[in-house]
Length: 187
Image (cartoon, rainbow, N blue to C red; front, side, top):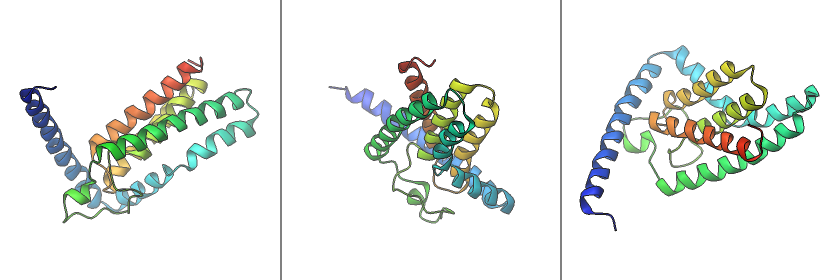
């Protein structure tokens, strides 16, 4: 059994993290809302994280004739299976409310596909794709990481995630990709 003092300490730490996340969210969301061009860009980047890239990447690699295409397709299928299951279990176990549910006067710019926010599934999937692709092909790493980070940031700008959700999603997707690559002896 966990002593009461440890539970209190954990509650205080979680409360402090929630307060920091809320302050950061308000700054980023407010900054984006005040700038129409940034908001429009964030909406487009957020949409790019809806899963199309995860489907198109192995297809494009396959069509390119790369000898790594079958390995890449299999590795992504395994990684995304693990990532999606992990994301779903975490999100529905932890049940962290979205920013608009915690601040009733705040309205997100898009409707989220599900109720809870932690971790960000868009960010997790983007980083899973980014890391797996980088591990197998190298070269395009900077562009992929910029895109994955932009997907995460866009989710805060459009008002559906806290910054902490983005950090957790990035970590989850990256760890799953590295673990999958390691398990399949690709890295």
